[in-house]
Length: 86
Image 1 (cartoon, rainbow, N blue to C red):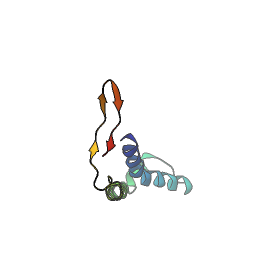
Image 2: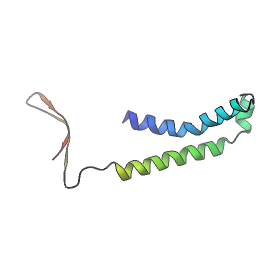
Image 3: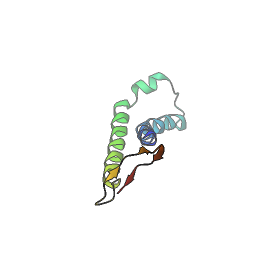
Image 4: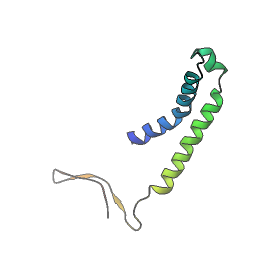
């Protein structure tokens, strides 16, 4: 679960990183004024679209095996039995 949250956080912050890189490459000062005048709303929208696409792809391709039922992890006779599909 932490990996999924981290992946989506990185995808959301990716447009901001590219904008900061563009400011650095174009030799503009990285002052708060450039960030205020910058396309913050567009960066948020692009980040949200990237996260939405990622969530859609994850929901489409991350499926359980057909015809099998998930059994959650349990402790049976003092032994940990991991979750599995049966």
